[in-house]
Amino acid sequence: MTLQQSALPTTMAAARPASRRDKSRLYQEIGMLAPAVILLTIFLIVPFLLSFWTAMTNQPLVPRPTPVRFIGFNNFLRILRDDLFWTSLWNVSRFTLWILPIQCGLAFATALLLHQKLPFRNFFRGLFFLPAITSMVVVCVIWGTLFQYPTGPLNQVIGFLSGGSIQPVDWLGDPDWAMFSIVLLSAWQAYGFQMIVYLAGLQGIPDELYDAARIDGANAFQRFWHVTMPGLRPTHVFVLVITTIQAFKLYTQVAILTQGGPKSSTETVVHYMVRSGFEEQKLGHASAVSVILFLIVLVIALLQRQLLRRYDV
Amino acid sequence: MSDLVLSTAQLEVKRAPSGIGSLRIVQTACILVIALVIVSPLLMLFVASLKDDRFQILADMGSFRAFWVSDPTLSNFMEVGNFSGQLAFGRYLMNSLIILAGTVGFGLVVNSMAGFVLAWGSLRGRALILSLVIALYVIPQESIIMPLVIMVSRAGITDTFAVQIVPWVASPLYIYLFYQFFAQLPKELFEAAQIDGASVFRIYRSIFLPLSLPALATVSILMGIEAWNQYLWPILVTQTDYARPIAVAIATFFGQDSIYWDRAMAASVLMMIPILALYIAFQRWFVSSFVGSAVKG
Image (cartoon, rainbow over all chains, first blue to last red; front, side, top):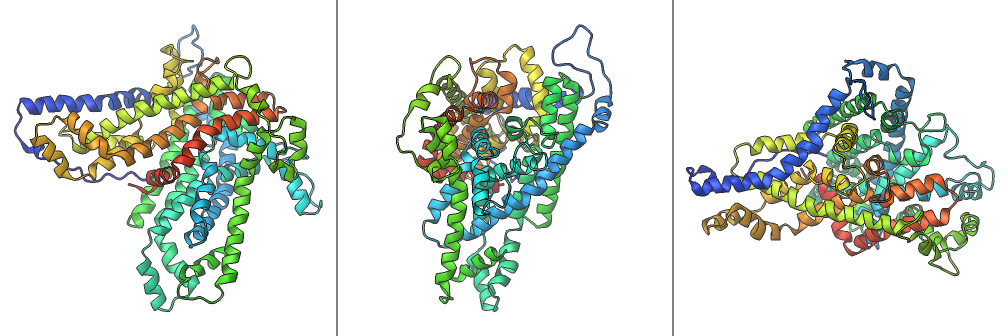
């Protein structure tokens, strides 16, 4: 998501000399702004700054008689030496590499199809968006059922389509398949959102560009490659970045369906953080993970800004 | 890849009438296959929640009977719709609705007032506050949740409705969405009212707010979905039934007794109904609000 600052509208009052009315106006403005500023400070800025401080202490979850000690970067060093952390980072990277082509590719293809004047396209658009409004918990109940081993619906469908030649897969129980299974249900859930974004992007490309290309004798593929694709560049950047950030924050599906298993094959950064904070009660350690997560998200967001600027958006 | 080429060819339907028939059939077939993949899991959920026998549900899953129920019954819903006891999903649903209403209600007021002042106020620091709000947007909820848990447990407000509502009322994204909406309204609107002697709050309340229905709808939908689907925060701050939202209740139940498909599914349907009803009623608003949050800015 790009939030760019646009010019502030100015009002005549700003230029007038101060009077009693201006003063009461000022108090009103402060009063209207105050709730948001106070809430953001208490519940966003303070915990954010605290996370940097907590990350450098041995803060436990339950207060102990021994005072909390400042231990510098020890938590970070411990995390960097922890194989499980690297496994979780590798897992979310693997998840990202799977979900980007599956989810965004499918969303893009569907958007191209629905951009045509097909019958009932608004109906389909609404239909494809349904999973996006479905709670992840409900999605987990549905897919947990579909993934049943060995006689779950998914295995039965695959068995039927392959004529029984493909053996049933233990989707969530096999370390080689578990993360891919999480990819499948996540893509199913979130793909409608990307599709809608792509549709909006496609509608933003002016028809004149296609007409001009046609007059220049461009065939369908050339028009796709030289008009549609460049026109969608900011959309692509946005979709890829938002999907990547979401992927690095992967948590709910894994917490409900696999708890990071089997054999840590679905352990993720956030799940690792929550576990070290609440099961092992090491809040300092967990806060250090949260700082690392923030830095990752920040780098991705800055990268997006850079890319969008290059495309002159 | 061939799909993409096919569908771009379709872009010039009006100019090239030859071969459209078969192309359209291929496209429609693609759409129908996608629709099947997207909808059948949801359909299965709804159908299964109306079946009585959980062993039958499991047996039906692999065949077309997963999408058909011969003698629909609401007995599963009777079982999970309680307001106390182990299957108090009726109560959890109420809890979720309270949290949703609280978050959206306060959120609309707080964020729209802030957005309005940032757009039209005369405060000197508002440009700075605006850039700060934009910068804060980058911080993911997941990275502040650890210290936030310490804070609320020190304050002794865990296991309440307030702890699930108040921290998420003010939000950089929604302040920004309101700011952006208000800022694009014409300057004359503000000036005329000001000359008539209306105070800033009056102008916001009686002139700008009634004009901002699209922004109010967008923020309500996005905030509502977010509040409804919260999972990580409530599992950290709720310990008892008192304020536990339905998402956490379903996940806990599903994790413990994953053989009780029927009940888990009925509870899931219970959780989907309010959102689904709103979605069907306001479909256009839903879709455009998600797009608005994405491509604006």
